[in-house]
Amino acid sequence: MKPSIVGALRHYNRETFIKDLLSGVIVGIVALPLAIAFGIASGVTPEQGIITAIVAGLIISLLGGSRVQIGGPTGAFIVIIAGIIQQYGMQGLMIATLLAGAFLILLGVLRLGTIIKYIPYPIVVGFTSGIALTIFTTQIKDLFGLSIAGGVPSDFVSTWGCYFHNFASIDLWSTVVGIGSVLIIALWPYVNKIKYVNGHLLALNKLPGSLVAILVMTIGVLILKSYGLAQTVDTIGDRFRINAELPLPVVPALSWDVVRQLFAPAVTIAVLGAIESLLSATVADGVIGDRHDSNQELIAQGVANLVTPIFGGIPATGAIARTMTNINNGGRTPVAGIVHAFVLLLIFLILMPYAQYIPMACLAGVLVIVAYNMSGWRTFRQLLKNPKSDISVLLITFLLTVVFDLTVAIEVGLMLACLLCMRRMAETTQVSVLTDEIDPASDVDFEATNLEHFKIPEGCEVYEINGPFFFGIANRFEEIMGRMPQRPKVRIIRMRKVPFVDSTGMHNLQNLVEMSHAEGIHVILSGVNPKVHEVLMRNDFATIVGEKDIQPHINLALERAREVLAD
Image 1 (cartoon, rainbow, N blue to C red):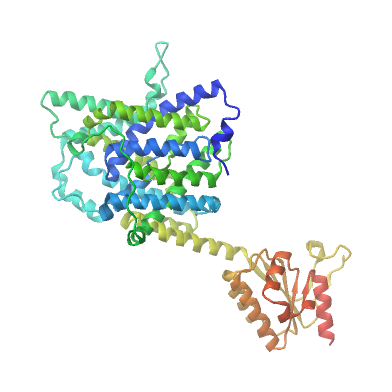
Image 2: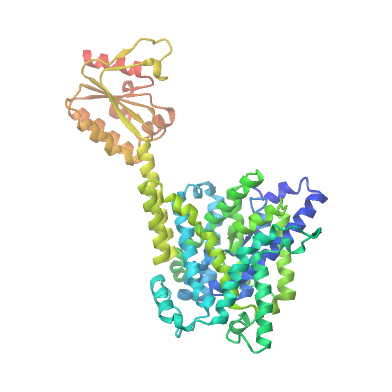
């Protein structure tokens, strides 16, 4: 494993650098409003959101396994961060993020990056759609400027009940700013299609819609306030004190009790970060025709989440929207991500004081669009046409994310993923019974010299297992044998298509042989592959059935059966 920047710089040239430079500048501008919005929505200050984008973005680009991945705060973390702060405070968030970073590094070092990819797609969609709905829910108050005494409840149902109860307190100016921001961002892509006006290149073509909305609404509110209008529109400065200085590193005090309490939230952050970062890297691979190193990417994400909270940042991961912006603007190496981090640093040090004038309703509009893009409602609708098992997993994960919290949804979702995997594996394993004859023409297990049909001798049954022999199938095998009308004198168990056997399968196989022997039935194993044979030998299986009763081919097993029947 090694960072992708090592290979990217081997044949680096001036032309590539110019593309990376331009792309990095554009991505930095795109990341600015999102970092501020994600920070505030998560319950921290706007500068903490930008610091996260700077520090995490730099580390992920330097150490990551993807050439084009852009890291930083994302909308997926908003719900979990806000919940941790509400329950454990900022100190708790810092410790949970540090633990999550350690978990991610451990996943990468143990080369478990590919396992994350096997989480069923309905679970991923259920997570993201649920998070999107939750983000949208949290922004209603600021979007419409609602006046709610005592604050908004934390749970989903109570929150909407509170909104309906207090909707009469809607502020007209805040609503105009919020809805106006949504419309600007939604319509801006159509403006971006206009590259030339009267033969001249349109300079605004590269500006992101979220930044345009913030600039337009901030200037508009300032002008209105200068005329004594829109005084009820809250701005960032009304709620936060803006500080444009980089904070000194602070390492929190750790204790076992605190670590134990924050273990589950930390696992949630780690799993969510791993899923989102590897999903983003995989999407990027498909666009640029590259292959990322998932384990190296997890290590980079882990280091970023170890370092970022020390500087006051929040959890970070790979950001799909910013990564695609990087690709679409010509970025092809991690240098673009490094440039993006330095652009944000310059903006933070020079322009951060002006952020206090940004209307909160405008940021709410930005996050409404983020939530809409995250929702993947078309994919959600398409998945509802799938088998009932997939629909159940999708809806359970979605509802748990919305009604309860992301920690519960992650825990139950991973359990569902394991159960779904076991069920799918059990469905792929088949057990068949042969009592008449076997056709060598369709059977690579036969020796090449045997061309005639092999007759199964009277008093012998052949059971064939096609697939893994594990705990999900072992009981089914016993049930099939129990339903047979007669008890044979010899049972041949063909295992040529059994790639592995687990401890439960091994235990059931031993029980089967012992029960068969007790009934006077001789058991012969056929076509055992070397890997399964090694497991059998380690468990002293030869002492149970005997060396002669473990045969490499079905024809030899049938000959052995005839010998037994003749005795």
